[in-house]
Length: 363
Image (tube, rainbow, N blue to C red; front, top):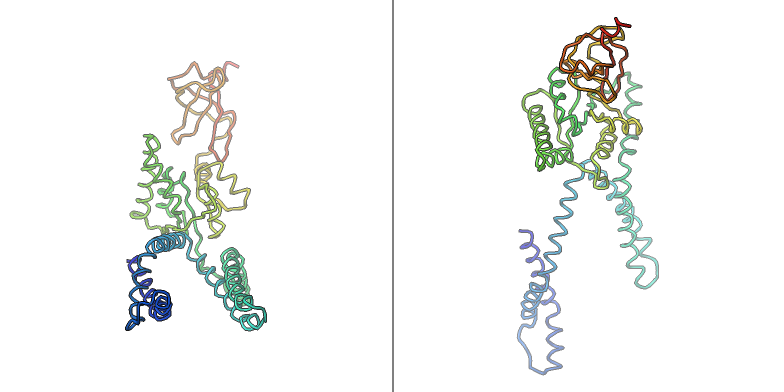
């Protein structure tokens, strides 16, 4: 459809040019070839111009259509707020260029006096777009400061802003976020970026069976959150073309939305802390609600495998917490009473160190 419209446009332009210059062209040809007068040279010129421009513009139409489609895809990927601020900056730049048109056009320099206003208007429009697009956060901050000052003077409090919780790929695949949402402990709006969905889709389409199952599990969890749970979920359609890593995009999005990243990725947790981005770590939450185990307590566990160090055995609690039993290698496959000696708790998880109770009595 777009190609057809452009073809018609070029045909009309060719016909108009041929009609306007047809008489001059035929007069020139007549003076050279002396073929006599032609009735209605303007109409012959219009037909000839339309036909010529129709065939000549074939390659140009394809190039213009491809350029328009490329620009359309770029605009659709940009967040609407970026487009709005960029358009506002562009309009502001063009207005300034229009105000400078008369002073610049009065410059008495051949050719330059005519082209300079157009050049300045284009330059100011471009600069206005760049300023509006790149400084949108600072512009929004200026207006938000004004609203906060007004609310303080009025004695009111702004509560309309909803806090955004941005989910990363690892926490979606983990699945515990659905259970947390069901309990109602997550407030605000859950934001699922489109680039996280793309990464999940790539994982689900992987040739590796384990990765494929993880990706499909993540998609099932998202479907469950959207359809079964009463949670405000938003799919963020934007992208950051200048950033390739998904983790970096998540951090940039958190700064853009002034939200929090929800994850269980230890490395992403550390990077967010370094960049001052608020984060909700599912492992921290799980550790906080686990039963407290103190040194000196007695536990009955089943040693299932040997540890990294010589003579160590490894057991697990019902919640998945790993217990390293010193001298527990000889008890592999058996239940044994142990005494807790120390507990190591980090964002990556919890680890308990213990030793057999029989060994304690022997000492």
